[in-house]
Image (cartoon, rainbow, N blue to C red; front, side, top):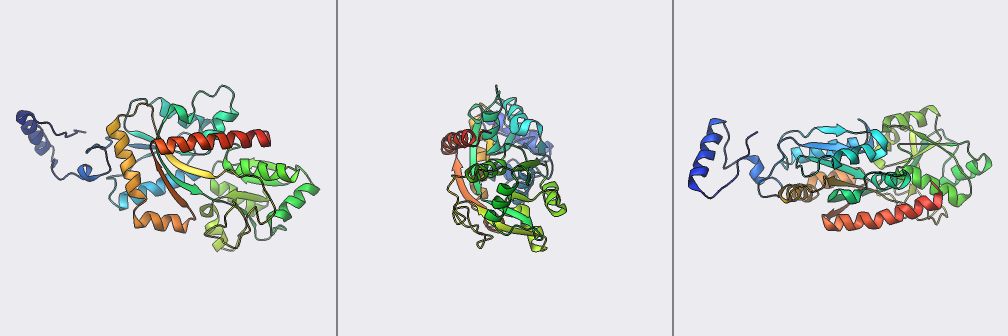
Length: 335
């Protein structure tokens, strides 16, 4: 791909115009001149990295984000998604680290990127080694069960777990995800425990619930919506101090008498170390533009997401504070 840049010397400018004409490019009206920040920069071979497999939460989220940005004209063309599933986030973090100084790779991140380095001895990469681009959302968690489940409230499930500790099963993703951490937090406060059954894809977790292979699941509104609408799942609790905007009738953990501070699921974007400034500004710009679109606002409302845009240093400072919260919670629940 030929990158057309503006230079002052007339001879160079003429040469670039001729090159653009020969290649069928219009240097003055290209889409990249109007996209994002970064002074006209646009990645030549973009890839959006995720730490889950196809169908995982981050994979679905990133594909939705790419689709909205394309439809809104924020980016041109399709951005491939690269799945680096190894090590519950560690593989993706290492891959992003290997792109030091490069411009075309960015990655979605979640709270798992904080918990994994804190639970793996000798972890080689933390978020401090990478470049914070933008924090996008807080994703409130919910507890769901099959509609024929004997549990209609969070306390119903906890009481049953007290009667048969270690027997009931929570379906989830990685063992270091927010759902696993908050489930362990609730169990610790209640003085009981239950098993955690890990699945890579959201669909597999839902199937486990529907088949009776798991008793409950913590996840986002988006995870459950289709099966709730079909009458196969029921949301019985909001694993949050605040009611869910999608399922406002689901009691919060505070309503159910739990006092533990829960860890919110955050989703944002990271870049490689030493990413050039023009690329950093471009990526910050497109996400700033994204959250202002009506399409994004409708997407967030439909899926119960709370937009909290944090850019650059503000995002980095938030992650540092959030890392301390996660570290305290991991120590508390002895994960």
